[in-house]
Length: 57
Image (tube, rainbow, N blue to C red; front, side, top):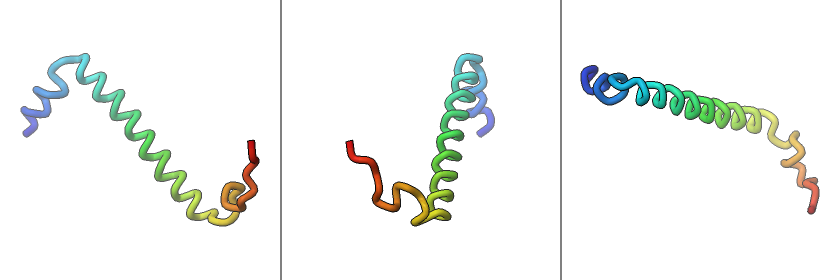
């Protein structure tokens, strides 16, 4: 299993770097979504968008 991982992601430097960069973006997006969800659930009814007072354009 480790041999397959090595041959797929680590053997070539360009693929290894791309995997790290894409993993960082995916991790950041996941943390952002989870953090926003927790913040909104904790502040339900207190946020501007929950009050129905959005500005009409």
